[in-house]
Amino acid sequence: MKYLFNEFTATFFLFLIVLGEVGGIYHAYTKHSKKDVLLAFCVPPVAWYLSIEFFWHDDYKNVDWEKKLGNDVRACLYFLGKYAEKNPDIYRLNSEIESFSKKINGYPEDKVEYLKNCTSTYIKWWDLLSDTLADSVKKSSVSGHFKFIKSPETMEMDEVLRSCSLGDIIELGDNTYELLTEKLNNTDTNRLQEKEFFEMWTFQNKQKFIVFQDTYKNLFNEDLPVLKQIDE
View 1: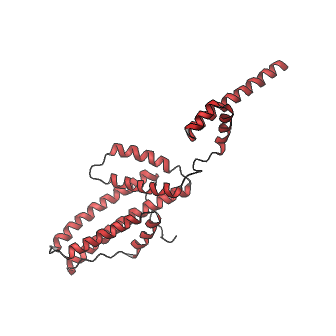
View 2: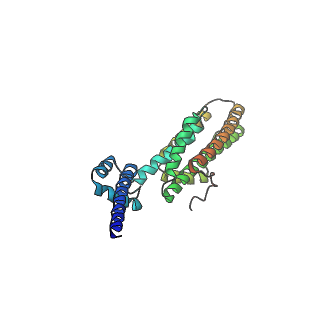
View 3: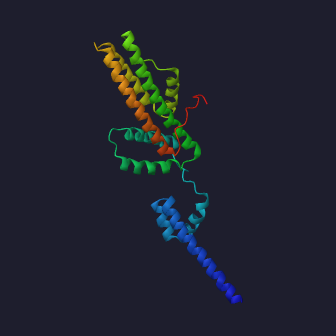
């Protein structure tokens, strides 16, 4: 009986050693560097430690979140733009966005919320600017003078987008509207034709907004939310 107990004990501990080594190598392969994989394979105690370290491993321990989230916000905007193109490569984009969505939705909750807020604010900022531009053109067809003025809500959104490291996009938009204002006011054009053109342009942008909504859902697996108060 004592012999059987000793045999069982020896077999059990051998099983734990093998399991620890295999588990440690696998954990090193999936969560650590190639150097750690090599160490775990060649030095069993390293593999044993890694098999235990699995339980408190932090995937984001050394992540520079400011840099990472800045890049990820721009990746979200990349997908918005690509899906809204005239002839998007749907199969490639679907594959890319599925992989990207899986990655970002695995982040800590506060980081995911940051990406959601930046992306949803950009979409609504863009839509509001489009409406403002169309309204300005309508008014210019009556007054004969084009004047583009940002709404207070848009300017509040500007600040949110700057906090998302998107200040360059705001500046690009401002410069574009300044050039457009100068061109429309310094050109002898038919205001009625301008109005008709921008009405068509507004319709196209509304279609683009629908694409943005669908893309947001593909990114975050939820519908585009109603915009919260900026100061919340």
